[in-house]
Each structure stands twice: as C-alpha cells, then as structure tokens.
Length: 141
Image (tube, rainbow, N blue to C red):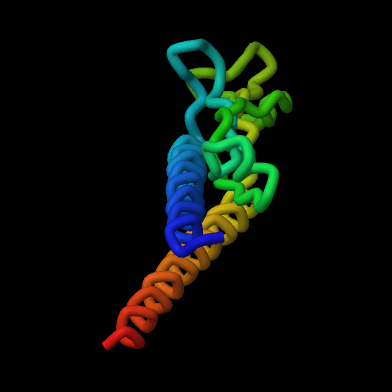
C-alpha cells in the first residue's frame, strides 16, 4: 500500500461519512414531519456502504488489495410509522391518532456521534500519511 493509496482510502471515508452525516441530519430535521409530498409521514433514511477496490489493474488487485469505501445506496426504513394520540392535530385519523415518522432521536444521535468520530479518524489517518510523506522528503535533505 502506497502513500497515495492511504490518502485515497481516507478521502473516500471522508466522503462516505459526510453523506452519512447529511442523511442523519435530514432524519433529525424531519422528526415531526407528518405530511410529505409522497403522502404520509417522513420515512427514516439510512446509508449503505460498500467496499470497492482501489487498484485499477487486475494484477494489483490480486497482490495487495486496498479497498475504498463508497455509498452504494440510501434506503428508506420500512418500519411502520409511530402512532401518537393527538386528536387536535390536522393529520389525525378518525380515532385521533397521528402517524409520526419512525425516527428514534437517541438512535439518530448515537449514529451521528459515530459518523462524526469516523470522520475525525479519517482526517487523522490522512494527516498521518501527509506527515510521513513530509518526513520522507526531509530525509532527502
């Protein structure tokens, strides 16, 4: 694994975690959205990651495989909406229940914290690779 491979892998991790943070932020912003253009309450979204080989050449992939992370898709959670009793709400059904988004605030905050820590770890790894390159250049002086 070369120096540029390490930087490329960290950069792919930064991009993937930024997407995850944006999706989680959207979930948190829509925690009370009961009406969407598609109809019904907002549906929680989640990011699916996949590993992709860094090396383009076939022989390079066989020798020392380095994987980058990428977002393969953003999925909607299939769990049913949370029913909350609020007969005064404009979206309440005949029994007085409102279909609320299937978002758990605690779970989303934990996911946000994990994504933030992962983003920071990728920044640290990238800075370490950059520092190693600078030290290697200093040896040649």
